[in-house]
Length: 451
Image 1 (cartoon, one colour):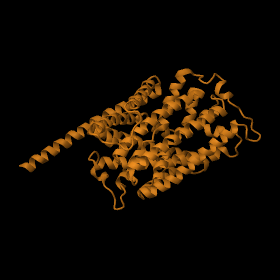
Image 2: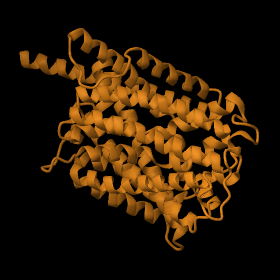
Image 3: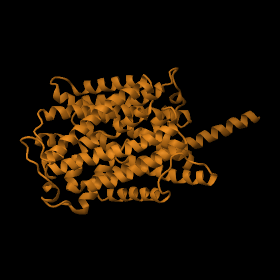
Image 4: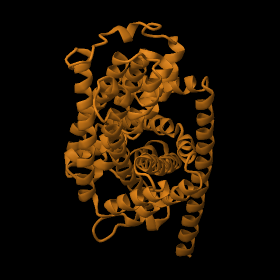
């Protein structure tokens, strides 16, 4: 891959339903003060990406944060975080295929949702089997379309607020401060919005996985991280600022379809169809990037002996084909679920992954702190560094801990956190048992060789 592929793949993974749909739910919870929620969550993600970038520049690896956790905290931690992230992403892949299929099926009468989901999964499996270069180019142009749509949306929004659209009256800034004020639901609303917003940023960590497939990864990761950071802030916070400025925060249309609601208010013809196409592109782009990330993670686990060895092998063209196929298996299961339960499968899938990204981020922060101290003690000069170490690293960890604590005050989030805790416990026990078995086998083999 080239550096431009690296940047767009990370954007492709991060800009999906979290922005196009989830932002409306955040606005309904916090009102205009959802901007504070986005700033807090965005700050945390920026710090985490910088820390991951430091580790990736020092040690590019397709296993990324799983490898770094193993080096910092031991094999059990590395195995656990790798499997947990892979589990999360394969479910997200299925959810994205399901959501895209549902939208297209609503636009084309007579086409079954499960058939479309199956077609999407087959197409993107083929793209990923073609190799990193082809995949990167495909994702580059796919993500470009999505980014262009957001840029156009921001342009229309700014023109709307500035009163430059013919026949459309500007709301000025009244929607930001009237109708209950800037913070209509108080700090509780900001906290609830924060919990919804933080999951929208999941997927940005794929940039550290993709870095291993570029030339001069240590050099490219720095530029890619810096580029992604400001683009995510502009796209997310800029889009939400337009939404809460143009329309009242408690607008029902804003809570269910924020982008469409703004375009309707701006009297853009065919807004429903335009945004439906954009959201499908966004979903498929994220699905493509996530399938790539999942296959590289399970390949790394197999290569390191933390998963079946067959998954850690490359084809003659350098593609981990078995890892790609293993990562898409659940997608085919989701097709069957689409056929049986087309109206409920998406929410079930999304609730399953819940808050696993918080665990991955938390372990990554701890890993960076440990590995940075080791590097400094050994006199290793890092090419890409975390800012103001260790204070900002600890600050990011405190922010993450605060979000987890807030989550326990929200019933729906509490269930996801408890489910994630249970999953983490099971994976830790399985990883520990696997390591004990491997160690015992290695001891037995060495004993027989010595005999």
